[in-house]
Amino acid sequence: MTDPLFCLDARTVHPHFPGVGRYTANLAGALMQCLNRSEQLVVLRDPSQVNGWPATGARVPSIDVPLSPFSVRQQWAVPPLLRRHAVSMYHSPYYLMPYRPGVPTVVTLHDVIPLQYPRCFTLNQRLLFGITVRLATRAARLVITVSAAAADTITKLLHVSAERMLVIPEAAGAAFRPQSEATVDALRQRLRLPSAYALYVGSNKPHKNLVRLVEAWGRLRPTQVALVIAGAWDMRFPEAPQQATMLSLEQSVRFIGSVAEADLPALYSGARLFVFPSECEGFGLPVIEAMACGVPVACSTTPSLLEVAGDAALRFAPHDVEAMAEALRSLLTDTELRTELSRRGVARAAQFSWDATARATLAAYRRVLGT
Image (cartoon, rainbow, N blue to C red):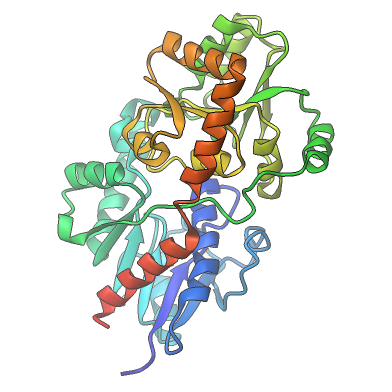
């Protein structure tokens, strides 16, 4: 038997896929450290999009594929490439992939939110997702997901058998740790951040629940602390800024858009608190990243966040604006509580590591190949 060559599709290491891209880049770097001597790893890479790799420090052999995961051409272009390079097993971290890759396949599904929150998506988006995610699960011998809550939802909605499901959590990257005051101050000046701020990091899609977050902030109206909302911005969903304007919170709520990944540890570290009010998540990586940076966290009681945060966060029901406001008030005013949650958060984040994720993923690869 020839030495196995594992192939991880890294074309999602791209600003369009902030969460999946970070998962893929961190996984690739960690996998390289865990391979047996007889094993090899190669990634599929879009040569026009390489900006995710420097942040990981990973030196991973690559095969150039100048095709987006959205391209239909990948269906007939990628399988011959895998055969030409004698790939033993193919892993797609995204549901848009070649559905007949011609080799044993693993797919990671982070969530199935379009099936859970259809109101947030157009009819065409829902139909496309429903078809392609089912094609992905049928193509795969194993389906990896990132939390038990996500696995339960995928099993129910896509009828994937428990034998083909595997839960392997994500983790914060090595760069996510408390940053120096000088580093935080430099970022604060460059991004023109307020001296004291609460922080949210993520998209503005409706299930992220930003309208209620702004409403909760409006009930508090703290004079010394601003709410900073950072992350990829979808112009189709302007409701949160509109809510801030309606409540006359333009000076108290700042929407700063996407922040470079290299700046995220300092952005987290400078926050007085981190809040994550999402109605639905596959994992909730920003919660672990904030904890790793020593920031006290308040988050919603959506199942995956309960699973990920454990007892290291202050929790509130996502639809209860008053409960959300009370959690924010407690963290803003109670120094001892912030100190305690910061301590718990650092310890909780340390329970997740990319080394453990990579080792479990490699075990999945070997299982698929029967080695």
